[in-house]
Amino acid sequence: MPYYKTIVWLFLILAMVSLIVGILAKGIGFQIVGLFPISYLRFTGICLLFVIAVSLVELTTRSKGQE
Image (cartoon, rainbow, N blue to C red; front, top):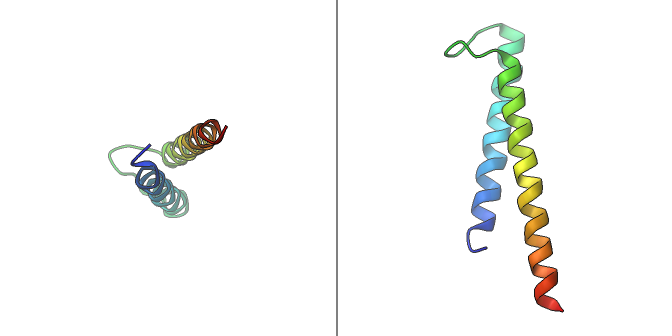
């Protein structure tokens, strides 16, 4: 996977930004394009699950290559 680190960092940054916006939206009560704070938090969860899945695939392919 040649772009593994780039993809992981991109989705981690997206998750952090979405988490911060979700917390601020919950605290202040603003909405962007009609999205509720739970939408940002769900997107954060999806990004983190994707990072976990990609990391597990990377570990699996790396361990298969060492055998």
